[in-house]
Image 1 (cartoon, protein in one colour):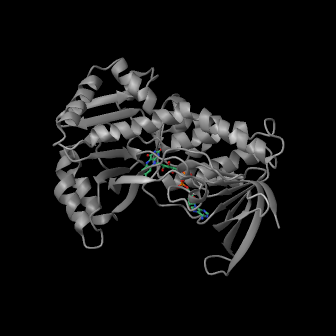
Image 2: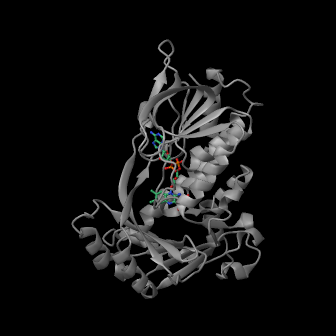
Image 3: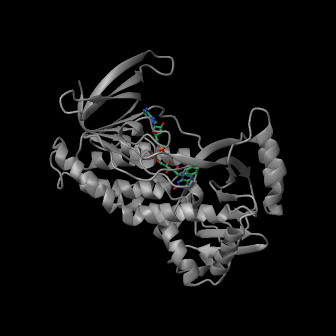
Length: 419
Ligand SMILES: Cc1cc2nc3c(=O)[nH]c(=O)nc-3n(C[C@H](O)[C@H](O)[C@H](O)COP(=O)(O)OP(=O)(O)OC[C@H]3O[C@@H](n4cnc5c(N)ncnc54)[C@H](O)[C@@H]3O)c2cc1C
């Protein structure tokens, strides 16, 4: 049976980045992903400046090049008839935050001070290429079905998976691989976190996603938050011609199959959007498939099982309104890389020392993850206040008035949000 230093379940944002850096650091790594074709998802499309910096620190910033990524310079908030511009901090050149499009990433002098928005699948494929080409890493298409436990100690010592040999029509075969450490980075619907974490996942709303073509955004090169009486929506360009719209729908989602969701979008959402977007929105409603994802919250915790680390969305989630998930995930990879480096931990089979480093990881990550998590949950509660909740509406208006002050009333919050 093949043995590795680290087995990673899932080659999404976190698994691919971790596989790339651990392999470059001299570890023998196996990354298993159930589907290596380019994902087509409505998640993970805007990377905050802090995430871009983390990517740079990991030596992976090339993954943002050649994917038609759009530089983002901050946010625009549309609230009733007010608009508020919230530029990211440290932009020395004010013309940039006024929305002058600069899409050539390689010649962008502000590379580290901006965010990027893109097609999620294109970014993932770049991360997977980096992962597969790392000297110590193998990336295989396989669905992990079970963890293998040591009968004596209860420690996780590897995984069992199903691999399809010889293309999509090939036969399915079962394989087992052993590893000193197994990392479950299998995303928001994680199968393996249930065995290791006690905390529950809660979801109170869904984002419904559409792609608008050639859409004239009020603030080019900015994320847009449209705050309405009903719920917030997000808009940002993800390619030269495509703009992502995410509509937050609280409670039970209307059915897609009987057309209720489409009717809801026409009746409830259209009038909330700026008039300049109406024709793009109606066209997208006709031509694009309505897709949804639950917006979940999961407080972070450490695995109770020796030999198993749970990471990424499998371990910690917050409402995606503030686009913080990838930034936290990439910062986690950077921190874990240091804690598991061959200098810090020569032998990954020393389980007690690995688990001690994981405790250290749990506490050390709080300074960046808590800020993003709390801000995401708090802003979502504020921006989705129901009109009947007069106190929350009062707070919402106060928040807008605060942002209108400019200066540190903007640079403070956006500094926290941008990671
Ligand atoms: C609607 C929505 C919008 C979002 N928008 C943003 C945003 O704009 N910016 C941002 O920073 N964050 C955003 N997020 C959050 C972000 O998408 C996640 O934080 C990020 O994708 C988490 O990365 P991950 O590697 O943990 O999981 P994923 O990227 O989901 O990767 C998990 C991988 O595991 C694989 N896998 C699962 N099970 C198995 C198995 N049994 N065997 C093998 N492979 C398996 C999956 O195929 C997948 O490739 C959004 C989230 C939602 C819900």
